[in-house]
Length: 413
Image (tube, rainbow, N blue to C red):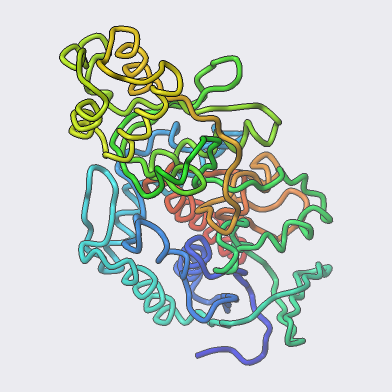
């Protein structure tokens, strides 16, 4: 039953993945605690529904550290080890979740992402944790002992300890708007400027709209102006009217954002047919006229891509009566080394995660308590850790939420 006194032992600010995990862990660690979750939205865990195309890709069987990015990856590893994959699977089994493994990516067996926040909500109810939904905290004041939190409706919530899990700045429509970064900065933290990651890229290509909506399975490298490879990926890509998307692009986006934010020029080098050796493809195309060549090429790639490549070939090498050796070699280059300048990226509105935030060196890594704000713990996207596509950002949420919740609750013993 919800405590009406508005005075709590522990408040978790943010009812997303990390916040729900922190609350349940704290309640399990110390059943005597009076715990409250404050959430902006009308329900808990709304952002979970946006992962895995609505299926909630909640973790991954491959937990190697190279799937995570941080200025202090060795510290991130210590947090991930505190609540590892085995512990995560046991936890979800205790909630009653049946699991589907798709090439290492873990989903609910039902393929319905909404079951995950529903199971969390039921466990939170059974644990006697209080909820305050649709509540926007606009001010936090540090007291000699504890904190006072003030809502936009002039409510005041008092707590001895605070766990901040408000998310980063990605998908602000779901409540993650970076509102608390200035407060953390004002209290001593040096925030790494948040940038959007796991999002589509904008390309500088002529007649790009002709390619919009076309998909292809291929391989791509992200390179800088010095031709250094920043990241290579493969999988299914999607051209859009502004650029390119698809899971491989989401994975590569962090490196593009990082380079562009440092005023570096970057480009994509795309191979539309990576399974074919360049020196072998197209030998029987010699002598084909333009119409025959487009038809033949459309058997390998989408017809829109075939027509686009043909137009580039004509512009560079002239009209095609019969494909000659020089034209064939240039066409092969277009197929295997298609160059597209990256001119930008979309916004936090379209991003799935945030790069940057509070440095791990500024929290006590064994507890995730702030080194600058006593009794304030941090977890989830607010910290300087982000992961690849595939359930890694949620694994970080579970691991950091667990550690923050356990640490905050154990302080009362």
